[in-house]
Length: 426
Image (tube, rainbow, N blue to C red):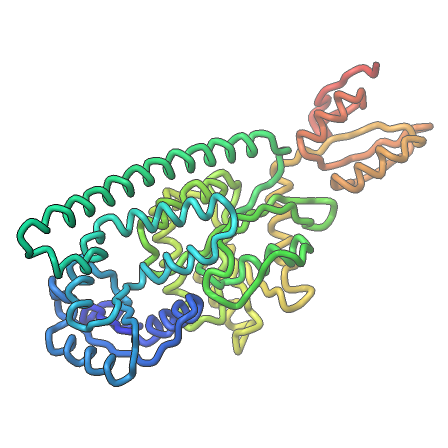
């Protein structure tokens, strides 16, 4: 049984039906079946039960009639509200945050993701332990029997706090490991995909990288683990692209905090691509959610390009593209359902990649076919002239490629301003 209780006059109240539909999809992803929905717009939350007493009785009757074994609130419940509602409704009560945490716990695959989810769950659980100990209520009032229950509760709290400290230390180690990996990578344009869950980030990464083993599913939070791949932008240019965990409305604070290590990849990126589901009726609301989470993660100042994905799902793609490009200058439209659907995105990324690649002149013997082929493969050859027994090529290359050629004794000069550097062979 789903229950929504937004504030009267709020944006949540205006989009209550859509929010309940999203909660239904979350519950489906978690593996449960929805048997009913109820709602109440409240002037102010009831400190004891969130909703009014009459509504609690109405929910209890609906639970009894439908045979529901779980009630899920779209709003976050305080520990007291959760305990009181479970006592009144006589079934287990969860809120949206708990459902999201449960989905994350089942979807986490890597060791890092499992650590992050466990940390978020424990931090969510800690203030709610008393509610978990309701089975002791039968003996708490008994003479001589109050102490053991309270002692066990404190023991559990201490164990959880110790585990939280241990998990944070392990995630710090993971963060340091990631920093070392980034430091050892070849310099290359790095791009991070961010966006609302199910906006199509993984589909874009799979289409650009050509790696069909990348998991894609039309479900909320289909993938949690950060995935980085080199992608071919065409014209001899490449970029490093990272798919990050999707965001969602009312994402639990503890979950955002625990995934900071993973999202360091986004902080280190040269550019963020904000992937938007063009076909979603509330795509603007989803964009605002992502912007708020990025601000919470101190990523609001990063260079960002909106990419309106699934443009094929819009009734009038041309009119939609015109509108979003007026609202968001520099925005890109895309789809993975057509072979040409990512052409504009590739073109923009190539232009960004060129900014960091100097144009140089390289002189090679005409017999050095292997190095000539490598330049065509790894760089952007803008021109080639024969100079006796040598080729003189004008090429746009990454700085690390230039440094490698210099170490190998190849003559490299700047295309416009003279010599970049030279090392003698041998």
